[in-house]
Structures are given as C-alpha cells and as structure tokens.
Image (cartoon, rainbow, N blue to C red; front, side, top):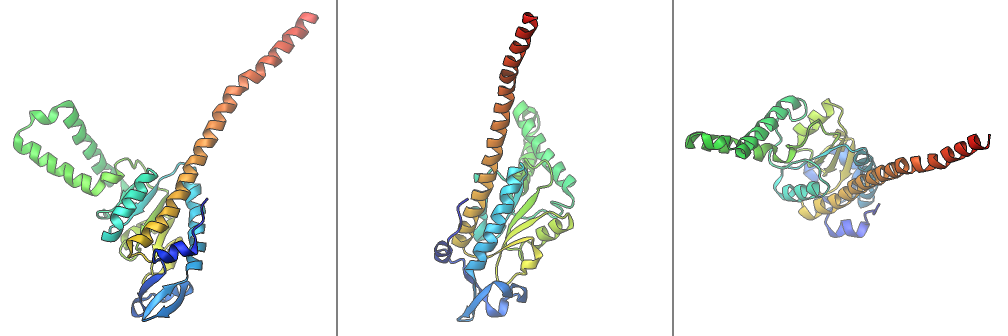
Length: 260
C-alpha cells in the first residue's frame, strides 16, 4: 500500500486549518502551531491517522462490504463523487436524506419507486399514459435521481461512512453513531475529532487537500477489493485441482485390487 508523504500533503495545503477563534479545543492534539491567526495542522499526525484509516478501510473492502461516501459541500462534491465511482462505492453529494440510515426501509421504498418508473419506461407502460401524467412521473424520477441516484444499488445499510466535513454532515454522523456504523472522516480544526472513529486531521475546505486524502483512501479500498478477487481465484483453482489429485489415488486403489 502506497504511503502518504509529508511533501505531497504540504503541497496540497492539507496543513491549513481555520482561524484560531473558530477552533474546537478537542482538536488540540493535532495542532502544530498558529501562524497569522490560523491554526496549522501537524502533518505527521495526519499521516499516522491516514495510514490507520487506510488499513481499516482496506479490510472492509476486502470483506466485500460497502463504504458510503458523504460530502455535500460545493468544493468536495465532484472530488468525492469521482473517488467513490473509481472504487464502485455509493455516495451522497446532493443532500443527506434524513433517516438515510436510521430509517433505511423508507429509503429503500424510494429506490424501488425509481426502479419501477424505469421499468415502466422500458416496457412501454409510460407511453400509454397521458402527456401530463408522463411529465409528472418524469419530474418525480428526476427528484429521486437527484437525491438517491448514487445509492440506488445500496441494498443494505453500509458497513462504514467516509465523510468530508463532519460539522456540515452532522446528521450523517449522528445516524451512523446511533447504529454503531464505523465513521471515517476528514476533520478540520473547527470540528471535534472525537465525534468519529477514524478522524483524519486535514483541511476539509480546499479541493486539492480533499483530493490527495481521497487518493490514498481509494487506493486502500482498491487494494482490499483486489486481494478479495485474488483469494477467490485461488479458491477456484484449489477446487479445480482437487479432482485431479484424487484421480491418481483412485488408480492406485484399482491397481491394488487387481494385484489381489
């Protein structure tokens, strides 16, 4: 697994925190210094925490479980969506639907509704409706797509959440906590790192900072996925080789019988 470097994080501006007056005192262990009224994050701590998160995320991906990425702030939306797609993971970048986790059955109903509309379009049922009805259904489909599009394939509650800006996504954090779902997050100086299981102290406002953290996060997930594939291939090979190993034993047994 590729390890993050101090120079790369520095270049991406990962170390820039918020103004001193906006800080959360619980973030103190990760502050390196104050410069011009701005807190500077200790990148050595960032690297240590990022590696810790990488190891845990790799194991989750290896066990074939889903990690839901959450980021609705403007500068993070596209970066997070791209990163999640690259490892085939679900993501929420428009608006966190209240009860997404704690009332998952309702979310599943909405997803089924969207699937039902798609089937109507495929089998021609939509064409039998009036123009006004088709327009209403099209608008309903658009709304569902906007809110649920990226989680349409999520058949069960995710095994973990990866969040950018836990202050903004506080509802997602609370829901995950309530259900004991592990949380991974990029946490800035204005947030409480104790609110999540795997905090990664870093600048959560700059796109470059978010991008470089996600680069190492997705690498770990991809590695977990690949290791699972390799293990499955080995199991298949073992099963295929098993009858071949049994054949010589059967031949020897037959030879013994004949010699008698």
